[in-house]
Amino acid sequence: MRTYTVGDTITLELDLRDSSGVSRVDTLFREDASGRVISMHGDGGGEKEVTVRLEVELTDETFPGEYRCRFVDAYNTRGGKDTHHPDIRFRVQMFPAEGGGPELVEWRLS
View 1 (cartoon, rainbow, N blue to C red):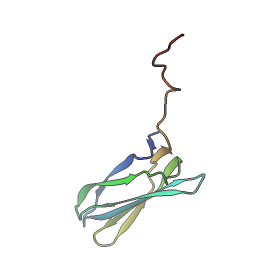
View 2: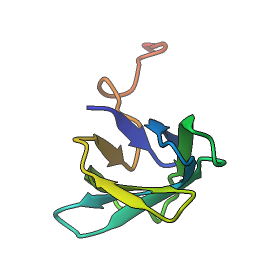
View 3: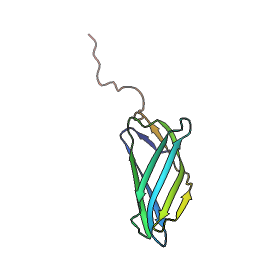
């Protein structure tokens, strides 16, 4: 599972298609244990086929845990909406994962 830490930017790219054009996209990710959410929003620019790039920067106020996509709402230029439920998950941790303790750089006996 993809893991992010505070200060990272999460980028989600969604390929969308609509005959009238894609207007906007809203997503919601939820951390089930706490109920905390992360939302992302993007603009399709009215294009009929488009890759919408959604980004959010993680701050020290972001709750750590495993987040799961609850929905992706995609709107077309006529106001129509489709709700999708892709299985997108990621983990947020407060500090970068480390492979163990400190590295021994040098030692001395006296």
